[in-house]
Length: 125
Image (cartoon, rainbow, N blue to C red; front, side):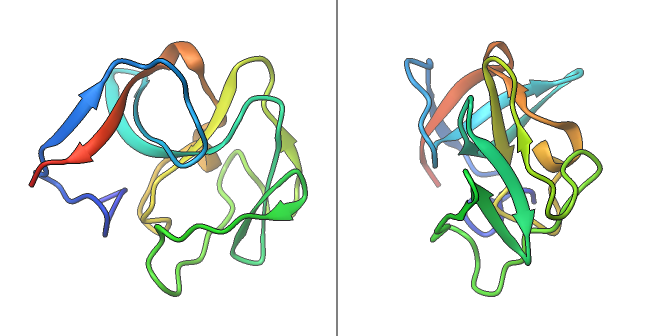
């Protein structure tokens, strides 16, 4: 449910090996012993913040057309409201599209490039 409404439990997706990672890409990443699907929102060396239901990259709100109307991005355990955070090294900020029901970088912090294992190229069903 972390990627609803764009992806649902049971969807079959086409994946590809990673060559590059861009903002907006849907990727599969490893966290502890599981793999999670999420969307790349912040890139290495960018600052990331959550403020008034919006994601700010380098202190500017970004447009997230893939989110459901009325979505609100709230802070988490790692990303606090109005606190600017910068990923060190090769860290990416990855969020679920269903911001109310997603464990993502807001709670676990930036995801290292080595833990991003595949890119979703399209939904097949």
